[in-house]
Image (cartoon, rainbow, N blue to C red; front, side, top):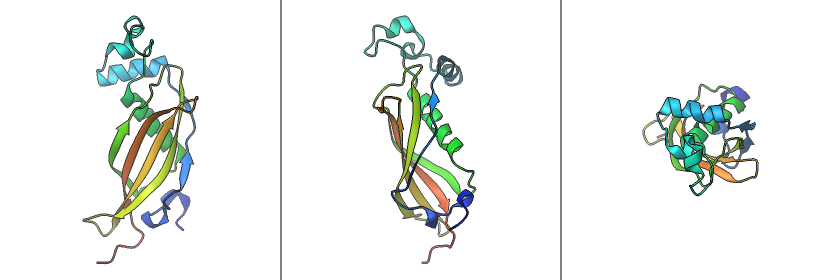
Length: 155
């Protein structure tokens, strides 16, 4: 097998999984994300408004959770020049993230397919399930990756 830092398409096995480190979502994360994104919706940034909403307190932006989850994945894996993002499917936020929640991500290979146009790359699909400290799923995405083959595909 290729060294761990430079896995090729052939080296990935369906079912293999890893778990990232954990990170706590802070008040600062929420404010900075609102500043960067321009999303100042009151359920993220106005505690008094949020008290009257279903969760009774502010919640983190869904795409903040997604961004932090992605960062946790990158921090937990080695750089690999053989892998590029191809896209994301089925992004869902089934439970909210509150300031002070600690999240981590389980990454699992769920599919491998040849690329329809490229003999030198394949498409790897990972499920990325983000959970909080209570074990609740707070984000789920299927991440498609464009991965270099060690040996080009045959016709």
